Image (cartoon, rainbow, N blue to C red; front, side, top):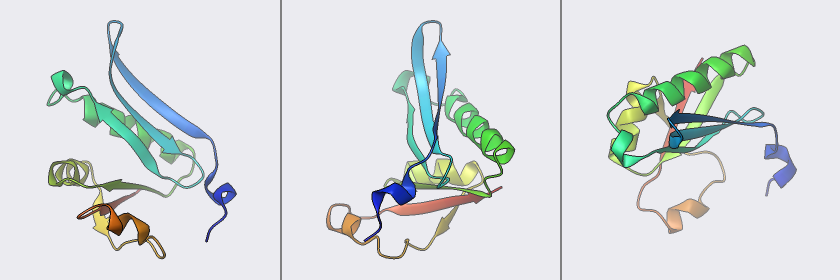
Length: 113
């Protein structure tokens, strides 16, 4: 088992607002390159909010010398979105079998920068 400290690092969170309302956010762990908490308000979907979030994260990652971003999703819609953003499917991570007990399918995606 990995020590939790191995995955700690600075976390960047990008937020998109329209007026005073948050319409999307995404977080990137700068140590592991793990993208998480990608959320877009339903009323803001199909309006480039997700695209803007991922582009901002990718630009920050490049400036921080991160060579790839990894993400996990469990829906085909999300998988297709990430593919449009330059991500591709990868094999499951070594030793990461516990998720399989609770989810029918988890897509592991990565984007090389």
